[in-house]
Length: 428
Image (tube, rainbow, N blue to C red; front, top):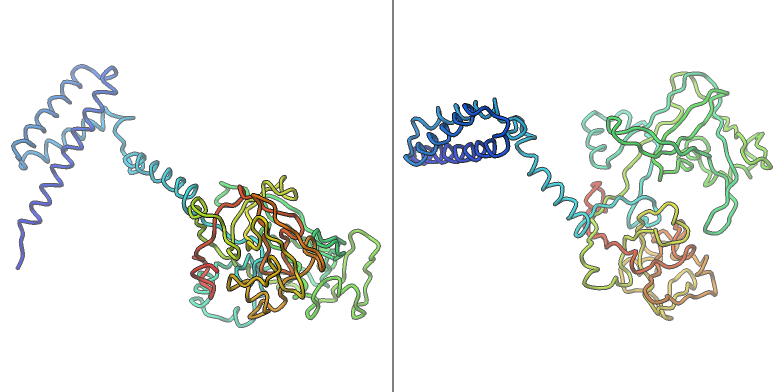
């Protein structure tokens, strides 16, 4: 059974609403432009308003449409700067309110945060890169598209324009965390334009050689390409230092120089990919910024904090994520790669327990270095916290740069919403 009168009533309601809105617009034109409009034009607008109001009152739908169109044409002709002619103009106030609301939510309630490094692996992952396999190259377009969407990946492919052997610059460096001497591939920090030229983004620019011809590889500022270059050209080695100290390469590498060119003996033909890899996005989290206004962070929780009050980062403050392992008055030490809090094994959280019992990817436990070197212990002062990375062997954390002030804590991550990996869902 149909009820045609319902549609008719709705149509009439819409006509009445638009007519009322048109009258409001006309009154705005009179208010803001009466000193600029001719007396005859003002009189005409007032007349049209009066006629339209009478038709609304009488519900004279036969004349409403014609009268509304007449008033609308008059307003468009004489109401510029007051009556918008575009969607943007009509909705600018709503858009402005929406932006303010989004800023308020981000500032006080929930904020997205992308993991910058792999110091919390395997709990959370930062940006990573992997060589593109032959299987991936041969995959059909839909598989490639799904892979790109699922992992938020993008491909980098550097193609050779000449024949030759790949050489890579290497420099000596000292790790901040333990002063170990290592070899790394040098890079420049440069700005490039992105997003149709609207923004400048800082990136790393690496330079490698095929014979004497330079080739440049660009990566995000937080992503080192040392491991991917090592895997491509010196497969089987864990570090450039191990490569340099090996006897496999007939090397001309001068270890006494600050920068030297290392000949990988890897031959490339024109048209081949010198290196082809994909960059996978780090985990993107939603951070709860409300909870810590009502309670203090607990031992075992992962926390997001700013580094602006930490000595090593005052010049370039960032946002970090680490696991809170020490609250004020807690005494911490590491023994047999296990973390002890006030003399007891830390097991108040699933991840602390996995690290201490070296389970499921956390097989190395905690590394006793820096402030928590073997035989050392520290007590956390008031209004401060002590934080560690879950990837203890490769985490630059409180062991090296000290405590996190209470005021620097921004919130706690509560869900990984992208990319769609096995880590997707509630944060640990």
